[in-house]
Image 1 (tube, rainbow, N blue to C red):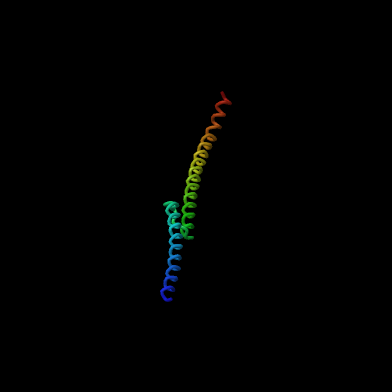
Image 2: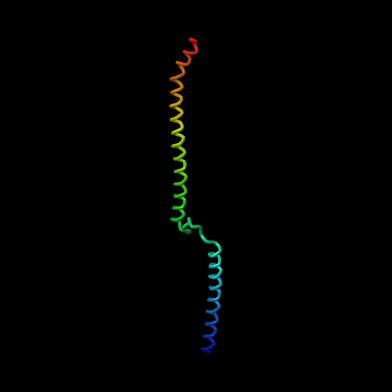
Length: 98
């Protein structure tokens, strides 16, 4: 009777171990087939926040670069306009008295 109980409990343990093994094999295959990109750090909340922070920093840097370029173009155009305004009265006078 004692041997039968041992055999029965051993059979139950074996079945549960086999079921757990099957689940772990499936999980392993899934992880092997879907590797994480190098840039991602996993599913942790802090890693996701850090990834989003870095993306936003890149976007901010790009916008700041465009802003500085547009500011330089604006400054150059203002200087050009002021040169044209300085030259215009004398040019008009030359045309008028010609």
